[in-house]
Length: 425
Image: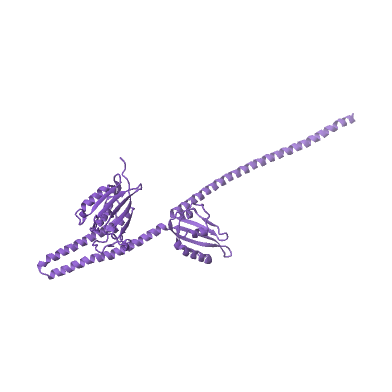
């Protein structure tokens, strides 16, 4: 019996032992699962934090990228407005980089060609080529900072004035490895500088000539007054008559001078102007001028109606030119003629042509006729301001004037004047 119990109790002990092992394993697995859950929970937390950090980082990167792009756009716009381009040259590979505005200064689409030193030289104006090549050659030897002006011919054939400044970058050994610089389109500045020089020249001429032209009649008046004081009373009327003539001449000169100066300062006043009608009125006002009746005048116009321009300014221009065509006509010719024509030819400008078969202008005088105080004829008794005022007036209105003349054959003045058209009712 005891043996039987032993036989039956022995497996029970084994089973109980296995259960303990299983319980231990279960407990271990439970602990392991808990640790895994805790670890996974921490991992998820870490992943969440990492994702949040990544999101914040991406936002910061995007914000910074936008800021950099905005700054870059502002820089590009500033360069475009100021006509300032930047460039660099790698002195090891001789590869060049141009900013968008540098391309535009040279009249090229950004990135359309690979910039090179040869392209830079090829775009240089022929008259400045030698100077630029000498300067750049010297700078490649001295590696000193530089700044110089030169002219280029853009891809469109436009001549531009450019100021280029730059400096070298050196490595640790002192070797020049890069060249950085800027190019500035200073064409507008140069034009203003040239205009200022012209104005200063005209001012000097004005002061000299006006003082000379004023002092002559004044000296004559003073001389006549002295003579009149020493002569019997009967002679005084003759002297007073001469004084009156000289005084009127002075008055005319002063009025011309005032008009010449006011042309530049007065703002244009635009209104509807019928050029054909205006010309007719001018001819009516001049019909008692000496020689008027001997000249045949023609007026042709393909304008459909009035135009918008400065009435007073255009009147002054037409009056001056028509007066000149009468004053300097050759009355010995069989058919003294003055032709006046207005046409548009499909352009936003009115073309005005006033031509005559009069005495014409000598070749050596053609480039001077629009100068202040210039008198093209020995017989001229005018102030020398008429054509100067004409040119200044036309340029004030944004137009141009040119003269074509041959001595003994006549003169033709051609004007291009920007105008507007009246609004349609």
